Amino acid sequence: MAFKRWFGGGDTSASHRDQELSAEDLIVLERYEEAEKLLLAELKKKPGSLRKRLKLAEVYEGSHQLDKAVHEYVGIADSYSADGFHDKSRALLSRAVRLRPLDESLKRRLDHIQQAKRLEHSRVIATEGLLAGSGETQTAVVLKQYWSKIAHSSLVKSLPNDQLKRLFSVMKMIRGEPGRILAQRDSREARLFLVLQGKVEAVYGRAQGQLTNLRTFSSGDIVGEGSLLEHRPWPATYRVVDSAILFYLGREGLENALIGNPDPRGFLTALREQGHDRELAEMVAKLDKG
Image 1 (spheres, rainbow, N blue to C red):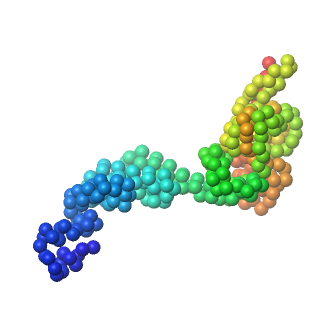
Image 2: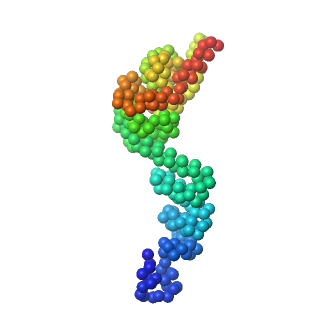
Image 3: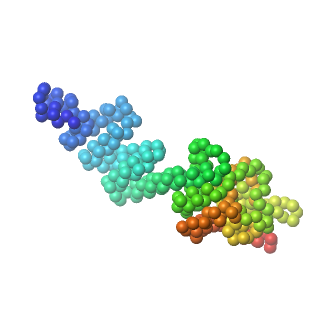
């Protein structure tokens, strides 16, 4: 601050004092027009300065140029969010919402940031489980790639962080080349697969030996919940289409996940939620009749 220079000794001419005032000084003095001009000039030299853009937003707010203030707050929030600073982004969006409380688009942005914050926290917790379950030494980059494939799946949205970690730590990772059979129709191998990467298809065999593709599964999809959780035979034959990375859960892993589980019912419900096996069983039943 330059208050000593304003009221103390030295050159006391008004023009000299004004030349020494910073944007922060001008904001304190509520000389917003001058502060705006100064900040815009500084941003021409350093257009990427978020600190100066934040000061400019404060100037716009102080001078009741609310549309401009909101525009700056949102822009800075987007920059923070892109760099993973979700708390800072959320704080700035909250300021924008306060200025424009009826703007639903701002509320949606804030909800999106809050969801991103939750997913980031989930990623940190869940990747610990991924590392334990993979059985391999994985780099942080590889684990992040795995997580990005399933981050928006219904499974991740349904399970709290501690349950995600519990699940991934008891699953085992396998790699499948095209054509690999994961399960044959009517077999009773009690296991469940979560597709991390690649594709898996469910096929139906006709009497003539022809195979009909019933459905293709990709990242985040679960198959086999009927066999593992409900002791039902596999409704179709499941095979790898592209080179795939999958996590599978067997009977022993499921038992370990349920030991000491604070919410076993919620855990099992999340695994059943997609219901792919049930849908395929209904499709196959119709094909058998027709």
